[in-house]
Image 1: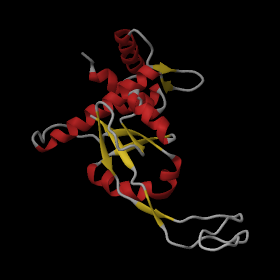
Image 2: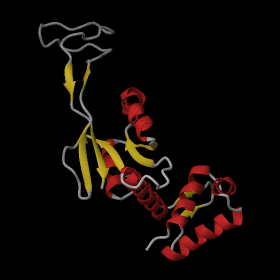
Image 3: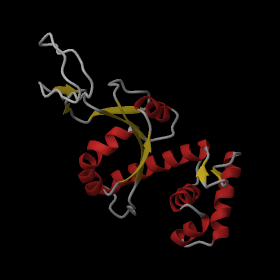
Length: 202
């Protein structure tokens, strides 16, 4: 059975980037925070943090953090029936590709995060790598192109968008026997981009 006080200490140390700041947040001394992390490592029989060259969770530590985030989301869902529960803003670690982050992601997710009081930890990865991270338990959700759910996860369609072909080199015009000049951009019929999908661990 996991001691969630120890997981909370681990999550706070990682979020704050150090033991001293984590102690200020938790209302504990730096030594007490360190002791909690040591107790967790003894319980697991392996380290949960790499301290050099910079503070970061080990693979085992990251799996614990992902689990802890999922537990926080489950506890938040109990708020309707158990309103006396504390309800700190839960964090969700998501693997997502860089193109989505710099284009549509922030606008699409902002209202949901604000309404649900949700904080997101974004892991920038290609879609195939993000799916592997979800299978490995390194993230709680990922953005991907596959419609097939993996074991222990649910898949949600996030909608669709349109894109236009742009080119800066000559290419064959499918409607005429000629070449478009360099720098001219195709402004013909746009096409539907496959709907992005989110896989969420359950």
